Every structure is written in structure tokens, then in C-alpha cells.
Image (tube, rainbow, N blue to C red; front, side, top):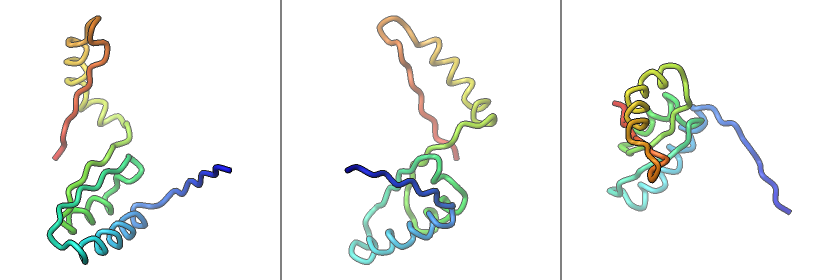
Length: 97
């Protein structure tokens, strides 16, 4: 029997969990580089502030919103220009900050 549980955590709750987990990792490996990867539900100010304070790198997805759509417009145009029969999908990645 396969059961899936979905839990919606707030940014503060996610930050609390990250502090705990990263603290445990650092206790054993104090100088290790840590990269946290999370989807858009985990991309909130408390999470980002916690990761910065703990000296971690991070890759967090952002939920689509009007501001991001406007910022992405130049890259969407470039993708349209680069798309062709032998390359039907073109992806671009960008780093904010």
C-alpha cells in the first residue's frame, strides 16, 4: 500500500528544519560546502535569510508571477529565435541577485 502525505509548511517552519539539519551536518563536517535545492513552495524570505546566515548555497525555484514573466520576456524571445525543427525545445536559465 502506497500512501502519500502532503504537508504545507510555512517559510518559518522550513527555515527551522533547515537550521536543524544543517546544524547536524556541520557538527560532523564543519567545513563542508552545502547546496540546498528546493522547489517554489520553499522559496521564501525566512528560508533565504536562514541559508545565507548559515553560509549555504542554494537553488530555489520561483513560482510564476507577473514580475517574473516580465523579467523573462527577453529570454523567451531568444528561445523563440533559437527554436527550429531539430531543436524543438530551447531552455534558458538565469540567476537573480
